[in-house]
Image 1: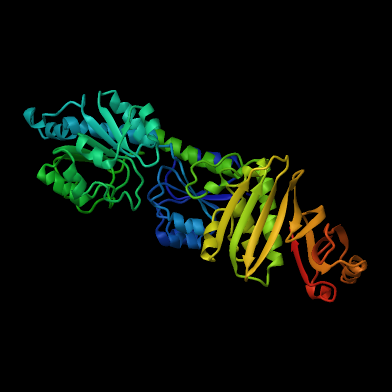
Image 2: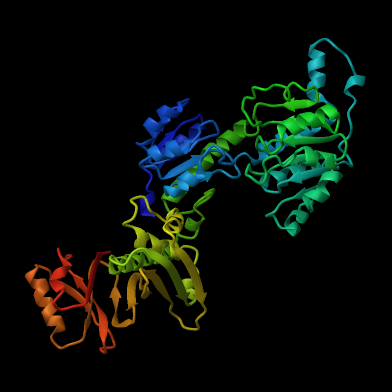
Length: 527
């Protein structure tokens, strides 16, 4: 995690002052520059380790490509629609949001729009301001006993449900992730969308904007709803097909809409906004003093916690890091990277790699299954890219055509081990090791089992040769001639045939070819 040291952060939008204060109190230099154009941001971003944005700054692939030092993009709010997450992931940059910062504010606005739709509050207020007194025109309906369909049962959907239940509404919902028994515990009956549409008097959406949710409410789904259904969108513009909504409003199939978000913001086409049955807001979901303070504070605390290896909250593309903050996991990551580097050194002339299989054994190795493959790949592919890390290495391996598999074997023993098998140029190479007393060690290289575990630290020389009484002295003589001292030596248990040896040395050889008369293969690495 040392590679995620954050020393400087650029804040490109207006956030709560506590954000800057918290970052600076933890030794992070902060620069605030608002309202930058894309070209200005591209020029500016190269100097910073972190970027904090709200929703206006568009962090595109061009911006990310220009960010040579960027390690984290923090979105002070929910959702990351304005960030190219794929481009960030490929570059090994963490993308983080504040998942709970504006939950209450967004839920309250949703409820306000539902109530306003039921009683025509904004329209009545505007009529009063125009000098009218028209009670019949704004005849409303009670919420009591009505059915509210909630599409998306995350934090905001849950809060909306609990509030509208207090008005006596029946709450039903749909969510592909939240288990039905969980939503049932807070009074929401889950069902399929096909079952939900025809039952609802009101529908509110609380999903991210993704291919599966674009146009979720469209001509076809509106036709399945009750005539006069009212809809609310405080999530993301585009979840409700705006053209279909306008047609449903004109036909009376939709009785009203409360919209806080639009496909284009601000919307240039005013047909929907100007419709008499639409209550529109200029994206006010998070626009409360409390939400802004919470989001600004949360993103700063999340960045500080990550830098200090305390916790990882809100990361949308770095789940692999979630279990890497303990001392034990750091030792396992060091081990994984080390064994990957050893195999990289031993297969330099055998690329490309095709398959990587990792087998962990023992209870102590079970907890590292979430990140061991990534750690090994960082060591194995470290020479292929300067920006390689735990976040992007699996994608990089896939780009290289590698197939990565991992399995765990339960063992009754006290200890544990990890075997890494790599296929390269039609050949198979294996390395087995573990962590002993906090130190990564190599137990086996290919078929050579070491008599004493080889410590995977410092400068290591590996060579393969048939055993003979003069082997060590001959190798030692070459090393002395080259000005290299032997610091440790691990010999194989078996002396039959060609075996691998591991030598700890004071420095690496300038040319491994000096060992050619004595060995069949040689490799060296600094760990």
